[in-house]
Image (cartoon, rainbow over all chains, first blue to last red; front, side, top):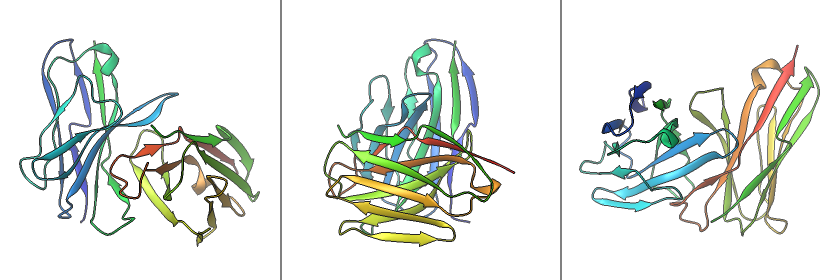
Length: 113
Length: 112
């Protein structure tokens, strides 16, 4: 089944403890991206990657890192999480054809205390 | 950055009624996507509209793009409880859609 898989679904952590949210897609998509969703602010793009080793900032990249060493994986790294990074995070991927839609994972709900 | 303003923010309709959701962009639209989200879950792609005033329909959902007005509308005919959720529009600042922006969403409840 074609899908984008995020792990974990839920994560509670403390301020400053490094964490990684994994994202994997099995559709051979070149483009992948990360979003955070907050009440009243909607979905905002954190980072995107057009291909292996090619990443770029979205609208809200501060406090996040990404890496794209393999086509299928695009982990999101929070080196020193803070409470304002408590949010619902989504990973998405997209095929190459013009106008191809984003395929979303089921989300990771992160709480930083 | 590009802002996409959706209206209304929320909507409660009786089952069987028609409804319309609007999405207005602060910048030129090169295309526009509509997604549906069930609460706390991932987004499901509904349709993508291309420049040129495209209109698309899928089952009871019709969407249209008016790029002169920098606006899109999504219309649901004879709403059903299964239509309930959050509808989001999305677009990019250019036709690569690498940077991508979403509206803040319209919450739809359909009362049986």
